[in-house]
Amino acid sequence: MNNAQSALKVAAGIFLTIALITIVVLLFVSAQEATKTAQNEFSSIQTELSKASFTVYDNTMVSGSQVVNAIRKFYQKEQFGIHVITGKNKASNANHPGIFYGYDVSPNGTIMTGDPNLSTMLATTESLDTYVNPSGKFKAMLIVDNSNVTRGIIFEQQ
Image (tube, rainbow, N blue to C red; front, side):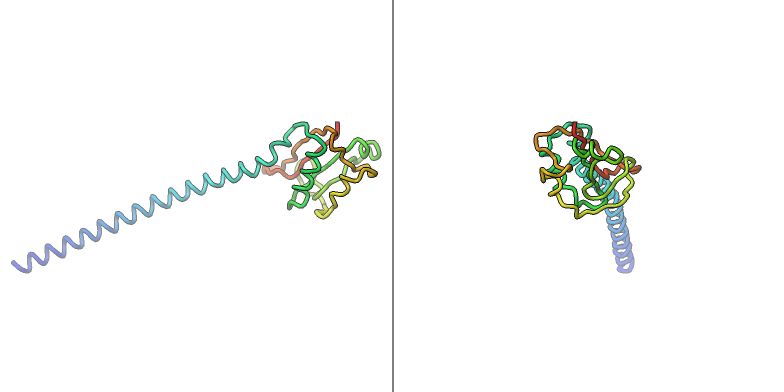
């Protein structure tokens, strides 16, 4: 009888161990799925937040002071360019008006060349044709590449 009780105790212990291992595995698998879902949600939120900083410049009218602030904020951003076309530099160079701060970006979002260290003084020195009048009105447009990544902003004085 003693052997039968011992065998039942061992069998019950093995059964409980298998049940516990099964529960742990199921919890681990469901936790992995929850983690993947959370990572995907976080990624989409991060994408939305990164685009939110540019929505103010998406086919809107902005003041010259907003243009200067955008130059200061974004001109050293990696793989990003700000194309500013003022009334003066449009008239002086009709073939290729304006100046790029940061990288020279084509209209389709391709990065051409660039000098990310170009001074913002060019936008604030009144004697230059690159001067941005703080009270001037500029049409702002975003430049996006084929992957829908914002690569630049065009500001054209109206």
